Image 1 (tube, rainbow, N blue to C red):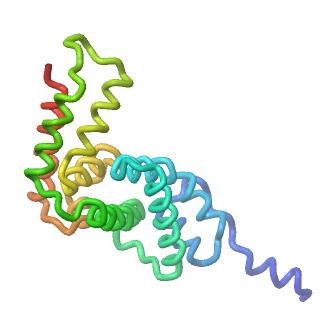
Image 2: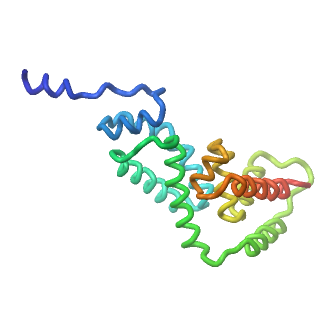
Image 3: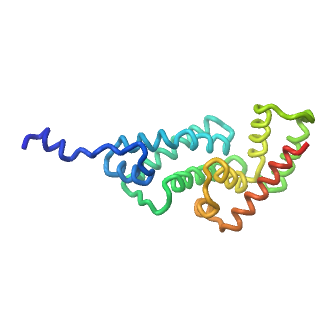
Length: 196
């Protein structure tokens, strides 16, 4: 048997683009680079939006984005599908966000966050009529930025990634009721910001 024929016998069949994330990651761990490409295309947009909303600084979000994918690549041979791939990947992202929060705001507590929230509400009063879509997004982003870190992460994972309370709990190392509480408080703050 010639070398080229021998090489062909070890070539992996390409993964389908509708394969489950966990199967794609396992295939990537076995050397299928195309499987990683599918994962990257599938998750890059939502992951970057999650990081950008969490950090509000494009350069830092891009650094964290690269770091998440670097860790995914680094773990390819050790990866075991004990949870959904997205849960595992967002746990990596969440840990990086927490590290950034600690570096950026080591002294911020709930009371300080509340005073920032109150100040920003009075900065630019909105007209009583309906806000444009752009203004609504801008106000929503501002409210997210002013939430305590734990609430912001929980509400983002719930709204943007549609993760269950249990998945968010595993990622943030918090109990289901704690996660539920964080989401409830975050939603109350968001509703308050949009009340006329």
